[in-house]
Amino acid sequence: MTRLAEELLGTHLAGRGWTFAFDRAVRRAGACHHADRRITVSRHLAGRAEEDEVRQVLLHEIAHALAGHRAAHGPRWRAKAAAIGYTGSRLHDGPIAEERATWLGTCPAGHEHRRFRRPARELSCGVCSRRFSRASLITWRRVEPATA
Image 1 (cartoon, rainbow, N blue to C red):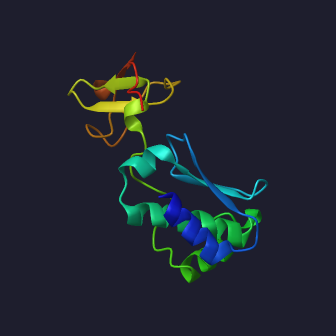
Image 2: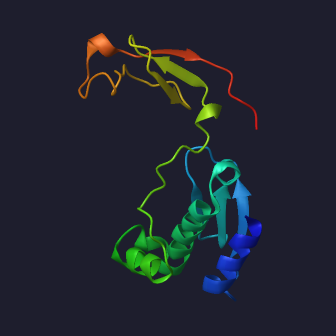
């Protein structure tokens, strides 16, 4: 995946001082660090995703580098992203490293929910009920995350 990242940075950001690295993010796929001129991708995502999915994450972040920090996900960013071949949505929507979450919740029907932090308020199961329901309250317990 490093080869792919360096190839894409060379194509779209050549001579601008941008570098690539993996990071330990568990809730996001990638990041564009404007101050450091560095693009990072979650090593957890890279370890389980197909090459095309990682390519799309890289293109998403490269579009941020090209559009500038203030562009966020607005029209300027969307135009840059489309111009370089990004076809994905604004955000990555797949699991990154859910198995590393330290809180496991279970509703009365047995549906499991994972969180990286203990929820501060009561939550009910969205599978059981589209609205908050006391009958579908989730009970949380701390678990040991998988190591990777």
